[in-house]
Length: 236
Image 1 (cartoon, rainbow, N blue to C red):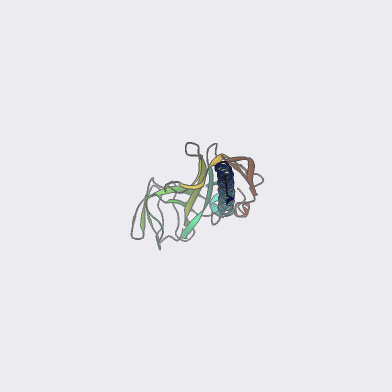
Image 2 (image 1 turned 45 degrees about the vertical axis):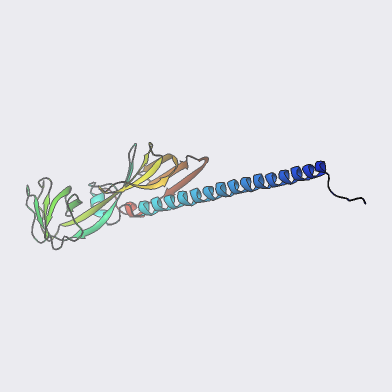
């Protein structure tokens, strides 16, 4: 009686073919998985870059807000592009005086000092003059200024604005674009940053931003904006 079945050679050949198919399947799965994560990483980097660009756009659009008089007097600049840092100024709030301010004085009594603290930057001004000072301390509704005032001010015509100073710079060591508000620690705005270029054309009141990612240097993210608040403050 003849029995039909696989010979040992046929079995080994079948096993080898099955092993090749399984290994090919694993290789295909591995490549597909790597491609998926690569595309996912690229999409996340794109979203992070666009979010950073939008945040810078919002801050630039606020440049000069509430500071029309100090900017017009040349006391402050709405936007400033230094070699390493882009700085945008806006107002954190305005305050009324409770008493006149004397020349050479370092004390200012306000109607309210809400939001002011040690280290706050303020601008004191009236229609004819003004100056910028740091707050040394806050006691109730009274401020102690870092340096004496150069002029005297009447409570009827003078005012005080708190200045918010927002700056952006490239931390080359960590490849991160950072955003800093006043004297607080600089926070990461965009990681994996390759380059960060910026400019501000003061006569035309036009700010420009351009940056690339270290992992995708072939694409440049750009922004050009007209800070309208700064445009409403003609320098005297």
